Image (cartoon, rainbow, N blue to C red; front, top):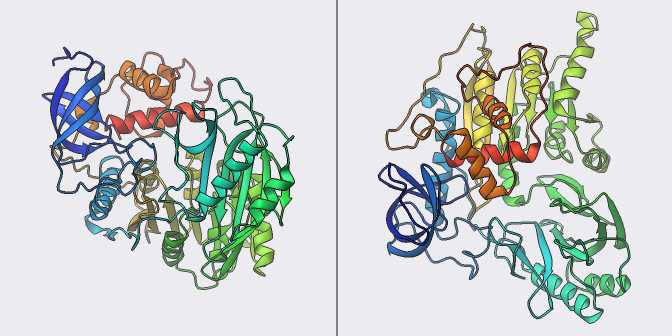
Length: 558
């Protein structure tokens, strides 16, 4: 394997695949290249940026022969911005890529034979632009000293000025202009990440697509603000704006919102409707960003739940209760759980707002709340134990904790509805659940919630088998043209270097090993195993685990 590539050396590549973050993948012999902005079917000229032992990064210089799926991006800064990684690919091709991504992950990571599963075609959008009801614009200063807002360039915190993202609503432009004009007029400085000084960090805008109500949230580095009344008056005069809030975040962190929010004008929240259920949405509420596709997603989850009015339902990772309240109208009782206290407060208010009395909400980790509830049920006389008929889960990208999955199997509902925003961790969790022999995978429905990006949502239905089997056989269908885990065999050092290059921090061998186990990657016997099964090692921090999973995806290990 040749690694004699020099920086800025020109190479010619045929792009054959897309990586987890939308980067084109090509080869020179057995050497793997990642090229941002390249598409499968492109023949390109690129220059070498950096190489490792078996892979490298290259910068696209020229598309020699374009992919038949390549189009001119609608946004003039699509290539510079780190958001719309697929905007140069026509929408039909985007949908094919996402559908294949879901099915391939289920086959390769989950080891599933999908021949007997009802795998539905992906549900796309009629208009794949202007769909986001939420936008978060970082604020900075340009070379002339003027305040600017926009988006971060990929893998950086350099702001690309953009006041009208084509994925967001048209109202965003005038709102941003109003904020930036106010900053310039009253000399309100933008936040400086490096120094930790300045005032305005982000402008967060939320719109209710059904209600038309708009919230503007100014995220600031402290409570003091010059002329806040002038700003709120100007914003409230804009069409649709019904509330203005100030969120205070003094932490030197990448987390956008702080814990304290002040209401400058209006009620401090907006409302919106999904189906016939109305929701109260605050600055910190989790609410799906694509309301059009949310109705498709939640409608599918409701259909898969198969409710008749007699069922008890657990909704894990429930957010502000969107799925919970959807299901409560057709269920006997719904329990919702979410780790964020503010979200549970929203969920309880939303239940009252909609006159729903059969929904109960808990604050805590799903892997702690559900096992505690189940243990409490087991202490009751058998006749008094509550039977759960359906469990619905909608976890974050990292998927479900193993303790949560184990308790789901102990509760043994008739149906499990799994809503996923990451098909790799979905596949891992399905593999765990199906290996018990208690369930079969009945249906799979991908939904394109995020056009122009690589992300895709999926709803899966697991149905309880009438007679539990002792084991379940799975089949891994590997395409010889794919880069599989068996072919890539990225070393620990290569994974560490990839994470350091992409994220800027160090991960240990132990971090990688623990994450491999979570992802279902089989490890050989390791001489570093603890001497006692009772030994305890520290958990891998969330940001490191997510970075390692991204590396696994990049190397096609999952």
